Length: 328
Length: 261
Ligand SMILES: Nc1ncnc2c1ncn2[C@@H]1O[C@H](COP(=O)(O)OP(=O)(O)OP(=O)(O)O)[C@@H](O)[C@H]1O
Ligand SMILES: [Mg+2]
View 1 (cartoon, rainbow over the protein chains, first blue to last red):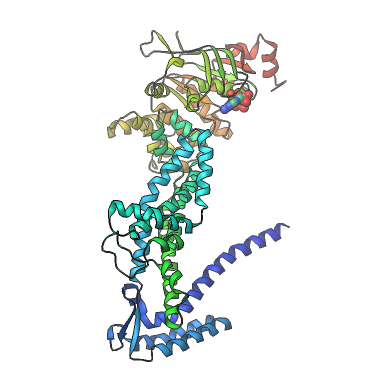
View 2 (cartoon, rainbow over the protein chains, first blue to last red):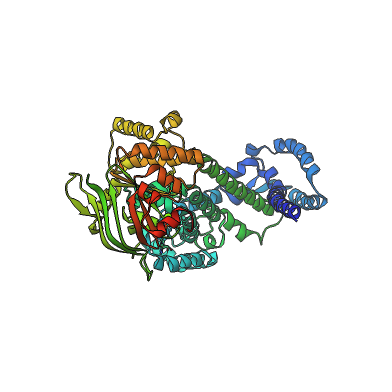
């Protein structure tokens, strides 16, 4: 019996790794035509869907072709038959499209910047408010109030994000535009809507982390003459630190990949933001908006974008864990 | 010799409880002596102790009746600590009446910061003075030798016994007048327990101590006075020898000889 449990647990654990690796692999394979076509320059190119003449030596196609076969072979060795089929389709389309002497240029810079900045705005906005709510619920509010408010926060956290998007488009966007000027859909509105969306999520998780602080620990700080504020600052937060940071990281990941709420309020235009009140674009929104009308290379480009988003979340979480959670 | 503290006719009712958990309790805490509280589980020992620094007041709605007198620093008059209303005065009270809990409660900070925490709270800024107090408190708590090379480590990296001595050092860094111990050794091994007991008999020279314990031998070993409590009442209070050799109440005798509780 115990053995079965052990095996089951092992299986589920390794399943996680398998799914992670398989996702990365599928993204990579589908994105490969685009990677071959645009290389890393994709990350710094701000044009999207613009035609240009091929005689541009910035991304020397020869070099790319020379290098690729090596990688091809390695990758092929890893593949199942299914994957090879998929890949063949893309390669075929790729050839068709690039056979002219013009090509269509795609670049990820605008949505990358849009994604990063909207998420950062969301975090700056939501962290202080969510922490305030969490501390209030677990340390300050009387039980009679903390219970219903806590439930309300949990309910808010479970509202589908599209509703936040609609609300942002029709009420919040115009409201913000009224205060800061600019468009009713913009990077700022997207960031704030994202922030509002993750606040309940972050607050609920942080409150749970804070409520793991033993009463006896808090009492011993009070017994030394600490005030409530000092107990929260010196004992509660440091004790619950890893849980709180975990809640922030999870919220960050959620904001980074959020599609529906952002799609309504970011504008969806390929344009660099000069001011935060300009409309722009974000990776998930590009993906959601363009999949239907894409094929061949333009589809592969979307997979390339998805791969970038995947890598971004991965890096953010890895870096955050490394910096905040390592020291014990 | 004047008493450091005097609990007089204290009745205490928890928020929402119909019955009081303490009924007309009287208890003197003599200066520079160790007073032990014994009694079966649930008889109100912790409740009584937690009234003596008003830690109960962290939670709303509890009711006190009676008097708890604390000797003023002039050594002449008493103040009834149950009349304290202002937050600042409660904080001052808790600095004068320290408390050690059932389990070690190191704060999530370094060993040094743990000991310096009380000073920091009371606004001491001078580095040399803080360092002096930290060293002296750790020496008094018989911990200096073990930790002097790793003061900047997280206090939670110490063993349980060391953590409990750290908590005692942290309390005496504030130079309290009374120290309350609520079963300070119940979570410790015999050797750590012995170390804490020895420490308490040394601390007695400078502080007045009240200790709750489930361990009868411990009470007999380290205390000068013992109070036996049962169902929220102080059944008998006397010199420790008297309580253990010839108690005047039958219940006390039964409890001490292990016939109930
Ligand atoms: N927060 C509370 N609210 C209501 N009643 C409480 C509360 N804490 C304790 N009591 C009650 O008060 C009585 C005394 O409890 P107390 O904790 O003082 O006992 P104790 O003598 O310290 O026991 P132990 O030896 O197990 O620590 C018990 O009947 C208990 O149920
Ligand atoms: Mg108790």
